[in-house]
Amino acid sequence: MSGLYLEDLTVGRRFVSAEHQLDVEQIKAFAGRFDPQPFHLDEAAAAASLFGGLAASGWHTAAITMRLLVEGGLPLAGGIVGAGGEIAWPQPTRPDDVLTVETEVLEVRPSRSRPERGLVTVRIVTRNQRGEELQVATMKAVALRRPPD
Image (tube, rainbow, N blue to C red):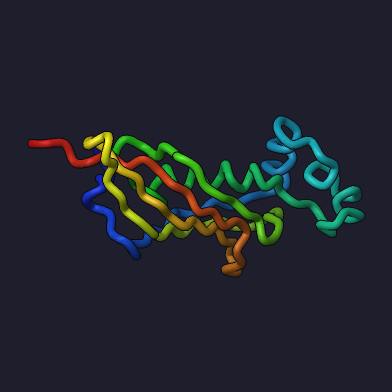
């Protein structure tokens, strides 16, 4: 099993993902299937909205963030299994944004009742190519303990 175990994680450790370039087609395709609101689907309607232009669904940003985490932005052994958290979108994700995810370990806690695992609390910031914060999340994830040899 590849990836990091609870014992490999320390407070302050950081990870940076690969990049994902977003375009109009991706925004409209996701919105059409999962968040069909006019400001995600139609440029004219989006221009007249509080966004002032086409914006990706926050859930689309979250889905891209998850993919970037899985592909190396949070390399946990056994995969990323969420155990709760908070998410905010300080500003909209736009067409042609290039997303990168930065993850910082905030807390590492072994489980008292399940010795094979623990919880890691992380702060996850999704930024665009200008360094602007598009999504900020604090999440608890299950982290496996290193198996005995």
